[in-house]
Structure formats: C-alpha cells, structure tokens
Length: 71
Image (cartoon, rainbow, N blue to C red):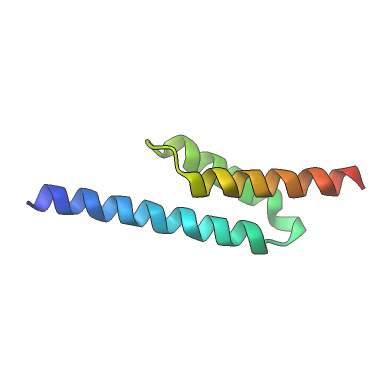
C-alpha cells in the first residue's frame, strides 16, 4: 500500500506543479518569459506523461514571445 500511495503523491505533486507553471505563464512579465519557457521545457522533458497544462503553458509563453518579437 505504501508504494501506491507514494506514486499517487508524486502524480498529485506533478499536477500541482504544472498548474502553477500555467498560472505563471498567464501572469508572467515579458522579461521573465524566456526563463519560464526553459523551465517549462525541462519539466516537459523530465515528465513521463504528456501534461496538457504544461503544453498549454508552453504555447502561451511561445505565442507571447512571438508577438513581442513581431513589434
């Protein structure tokens, strides 16, 4: 039972972390976007499962960076 509970805790921690990154992506200042994108990419690579919140955060940050560079 302990093994199952520890894996469930890790899943919940990963979900919380991805939701926090999504919140940061929506509220991030323009100066911090590149660093946040690097953090999201490393988190995505280390994650075993595809997480929709991480993918959405990455999309948000990349689109904001692209719009800034177009100006």
